[in-house]
Amino acid sequence: MDVATSVESYMKEHNVIGEVATAVIRNMVEDAWKTINQARFERSSLVPAVNRVTNFAMSIMFLYQDNKDAYTFSKLNMKTIKQLFVEPIPI
Image (cartoon, rainbow, N blue to C red; front, side, top):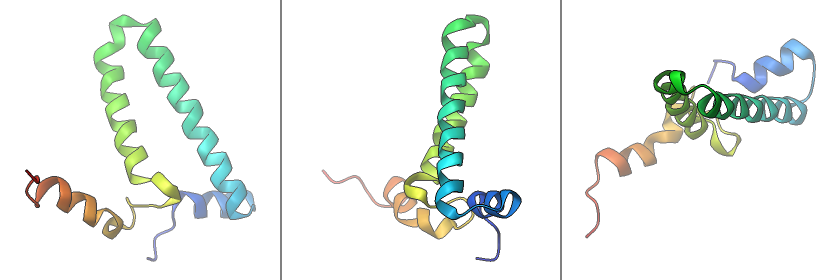
């Protein structure tokens, strides 16, 4: 766990506490979603590209949900990955 997370990087760069950095990043994510959705509805010619960005953004939300950095610390995803790809679906 020696790699800085986004929150830690923001804290160091802007000299703020963790709660402030988390709130700012959460607002950035919300603004990005608004921009993506706006592009999706206003520019139909861009739908294929916007869909790719949307799919990527959804995966990022999965990796950073509940204020955890499951991208940097992939062990946090282990249970979900096993449920999706290893364990059989209960019948």
